[in-house]
Each structure stands twice: as C-alpha cells, then as structure tokens.
Image 1 (cartoon, one colour):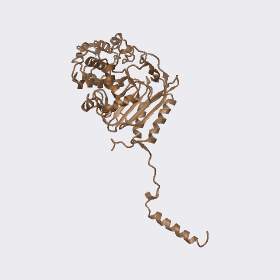
Image 2 (spheres, helix red, strand yellow; image 1 turned 90 degrees about the vertical axis):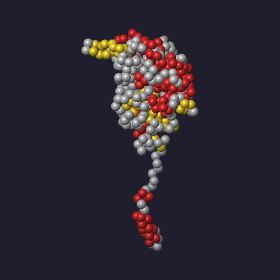
Image 3 (cartoon, helix red, strand yellow; image 1 turned 180 degrees about the vertical axis):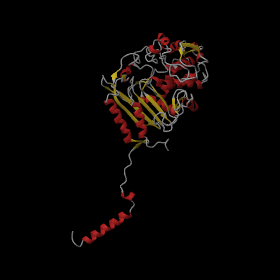
Image 4 (cartoon, one colour; image 1 turned 30 degrees about the vertical axis):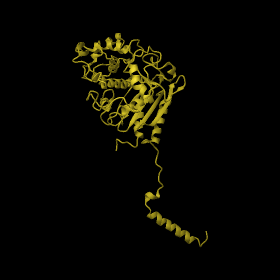
Length: 432
C-alpha cells in the first residue's frame, strides 16, 4: 500500500466504525431463517418422532406401527415403521390393516344414535325392548359370607349402555367368572371381549348374557364390558339388518372406508398386521387363537361384535373421526346432527369415570388440562385392546390415530408419541 493511500484507508475505517456505532444491534445481525412449519407443527420437532419410533423397533420394544395426524383435514404426519410381519420380512405400510378391538365401539355407538335420530329408540328405551332376557337382570353383590345375587333396582337403558354405566363387565371378575365361562363368555372368550370365533350370531350371545348377573347396579358405577356388544344387537333388531350390513351401508361405505370390516376378505390376508406380544421387554409373535392372531380371516364370519370386532386402517379410521369432528357431516352428507355429536363427545357420567376425565355416548372426554397428556380440554377418544389409540382435539383441529397390534403391548410408545406430537405443535391455538 502506498503512503498516499494510507490516509484514505484510515478515513474509510473511521467512517465504518461510526456507521456501526449508530446502527441498532438488531440490524447488525444477519436475520435467521425461520424454521419450516407444517400446519403449525415444527418440522424439525416432528422428525424427533421418527427417531423415537425407529428406536422402538430397533430396541425390540414394538414390531411395527402406523401413525397418522391431521390438522384441519391436512396431513401433518404419516409414518409406517417396522414390520407388518417380521417373520415373513413384510414391512409395515400406511395401508396396513389392524385389529382395532374397542375402537369398534365408536362406530356402533354412531349407529345407535342414527337410529335415535330416526325415532326408532331413545336414550331412555330399556334394553329389554330388543332383548327380552334383560327384562329382569341381576347383580352379584359381595357379602360377609360370599356373593349374593340380587335383582337390579331398575331397568338397563340405552343411555346406560352407551355410557358404560349399566354395571356390565366382561365377566372376568372373580364374583361372576364361574357363571360366565360355561356360557362361552368371560374367561371362555379370550380376555372376555372376543367373539370372532363364535358360530352363533351376536344376538344369541347377548340373549345369554342377559341371564347372567352383572357386577354393579344400573347407573351407579362406570364398568367397562359388553355394553356396546349389546348395542350391536339392538342395532340389528331395531334396523332389521345385520350389524355388518348396517355399518357398511350407513357409515363405512359412504365415508369411503374400504378397508374396514368385521372379517377381512381372504384376498387381503397379507395386509393384516401380525399380532405380537411384549410381556418380557422383548417382542415375540403372539400365538394363534382368541388371545393372539384371532379369527379375522378364517373365522366363522357370523358374530359381528359391536364392541370389539372390526379391522381397519389408520386412514379409514381417521376418515370416520373427521366426520365426527365436523359435527357429523362429511363430503356433503350429514351422518349425525351436530347436537347428537355434541352429546357423544360431552361428559354424560359426572365423576363416575373420574374427576379429570369423563365419558360421553361412546367416547372418553378430557375434562381438565393435563388429564390426558397435553390434549386440550374437550378432547375425546379411546383405544383398543391390541394397543391402538386415537384422539380428536377440536381446540387444535387435530385427528390423531396410532395403530399397533401388540397384546400385551409392554410399551408406552403411544404416550410418548402423543407427548412428542404436542411438543412439535408450536402454533397452538388453545394456548393463545
């Protein structure tokens, strides 16, 4: 550098220092690129879920799963992970078919409420109008000397059955199981709820149930059991058609739920996810039969269990939930009235189900923030015995479906998934 140019350089440096000194600090920093969002979810935080699910498979905690999340009907997250059939080296796919067990209850409850809207029954209608054996039900009551069988104080109603307050269990209770087993119920039906192997129609089985003692007086306790299977029979007798026909013609077919059935078409056998069990910290293939793989392909195809009988896919079930989330309307068709959906998704049992969660006409409801993880107050949902789970969070516009077929599950992967999902929701409406 020449001597003549040095004063010019010193002048330029001084001028730059003055500019920096008088420029706000925020303007001096280069702006950070905003992290990408997907319908209010941080994409990098959603990626954490991928890692968690991959690790659950790699660590032999689960064999496989499908997760699907919608916000305002737009896909936020969809992932198939692991194996549909590990032994056959068949990978999990988004259209894999799962046994959804008690997730069946929501569809059967919807069918009952369709009949209610048509005036064929009311919430106060006694079950005995459709099942005569329920005209004089009994209750097993513990005494100082054992168990006494006493008459029910009142009739069991449709409302009792929808809310699981009829006092009817799955017959696994010590006070009644010895009476249930000879009837092919309780211990004789897998874990109590399984009927896919029966060669008799569901109404025949439920007529037998009405002759057996229950475990609580109607309306006095929340007892989980055969309530929705009874409702499935009531749908058949009130509508004059088998339950599978009613659900197909009135709900699943119009909604486009092509993969939801009581028994899977034989041609789709390879799409049915294998049942695994984790009762020792490691996944193993479950046995055949009622407590394992079940009879959803090769069964008698006679008993349509409204409480636990369906198989479905994550996409199909999400479509059903979208209809409920939209007040009973989907693609221009009104399946239920908005007020009827409100009845289904509002607590109808006071504190019988708990002080922080309630139960509507087919769904568990979140009554206090924190009661079901990070779900908003007003969230409703349920799950199935094979480990599947779903939630609808109206405050956030969310439909959340997590499908797995593992019994016993031996994992909290569903809870971790839901926690991580809400942790990725950075544009949270309910928190504003």
